[in-house]
Amino acid sequence: MSRLVSFLFFSFSLFSFSEGRAQHTKIDWAFLAKVEWGEKYFEEYEETVWYPDYSEEVLAMDGKLVEIKGYIIPVDVEAGFYVLSANPFASCFFCGNAGPESVVELQFEGKLSKTYTTDEIATFQGRLKLNWDDLEHCNYILQNVTAK
Image 1 (cartoon, rainbow, N blue to C red):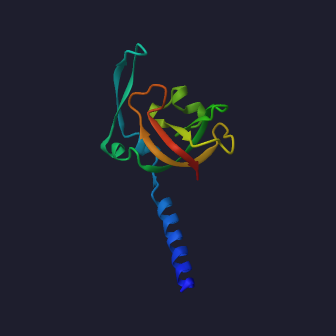
Image 2 (spheres, rainbow, N blue to C red; image 1 turned 90 degrees about the vertical axis):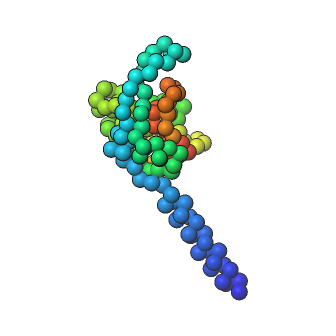
């Protein structure tokens, strides 16, 4: 009987592990580009900025586990602040050749085990958060990030 219990426990553990991994939906940059931009005045900053109007498809992914591949852009390595971009650094949003929908802020859980370099290509998994109002962060945020 203990062999059966061990087998069932092992089988259930494998099923649970693969279930957890399968929960991440692969998304791409074309998906994140399904957003329109308007302008909104933020009194606190005394500035008018682009304001996202996410498509229904994108809104449905808010808070969901996702996976995305792109180019890493270290913004502040000491603080562990990185973004993932649809484009290499020379062509990304910060350099004027794309829009804010072409970057995702990476929020790692805990201390990073490695330092990422500019334009390193990587795939990350995490929980997608849509950001409308916090100008200190990107419009797309990936929380509890892990490298795949």
